[in-house]
Length: 86
Image (cartoon, rainbow, N blue to C red; front, side, top):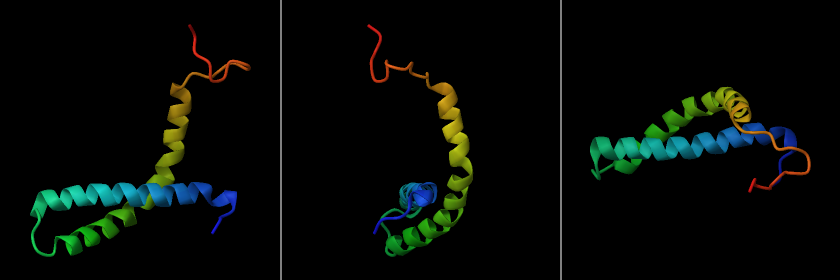
């Protein structure tokens, strides 16, 4: 299934927040309880809660981060894109 281009920022935020919250909640859950019985259920619950907060946070913060990156990265001159100074 392909989505229209206008949904790209939302899909980026959804995927990024989902993966990052999955990773971070997994690490936090395993550090807190180890490989105890029911750890998968605890992780899933922690992940869904984290994703609930992470998705809108990424939606709000991503444009600010992109703006910061643009201000930190040198602009290439016309005709020199992709070349390195030697």
